[in-house]
Length: 266
Image 1: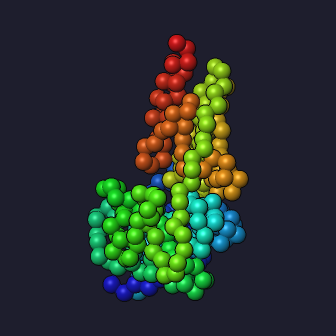
Image 2: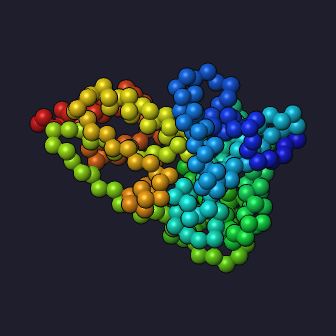
Image 3: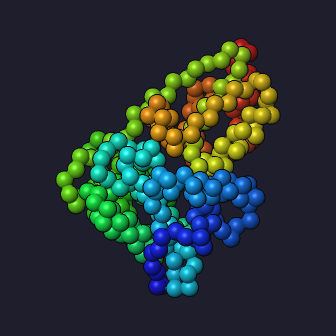
């Protein structure tokens, strides 16, 4: 399969905003994608985020990669002189069918490395994971020359010049209760389609409970929020972290809020 990598453009921007799900019919995902699309057109470019898209011989997108400077709040790291890969994904059908060896991921990472070298960075960094979840597998990055950073189990680095290893943000969240209310603290960013959908679901469900719920939203692409809380994505209900691995489902959110309300009455 002939594959080449290009900068994101008007023809591929919707593909990127939908995180490759361009041929699925999902109205909720489309709403979330509109938020992400606006952010990609405006804020992402101002932040200097690099987006590359892999296309086949007919120009059909096959995957994409996002990268930011380590100094950006989107990097979720503290460091210097590094370009950070924040998202690498191939078309969802290839993922669901567990198609491997297409070379798409390797070419996208190589395109970021080429960009980083031209711009004078001293290496690449990435959050990568060793569990069975398909997203950003550490084994893949290890094959490409990345090594685990000593101070973090999930940060992997590839250097071509001497530079200090980056470290993770230090989480500084503290729950502030409100008497007689359920407090939802939602940390999100339009960088991620899943987070756009999650924030939408949380708003909808919180509104169903009226004054019984206090919803605090924090935009983690804001440098001040990143510095204050050290979080990129998180959901807390009365100080208890909740995570479904994908956007928080409305029915599960209702159950959690009901449970918190009942606990407050005891």
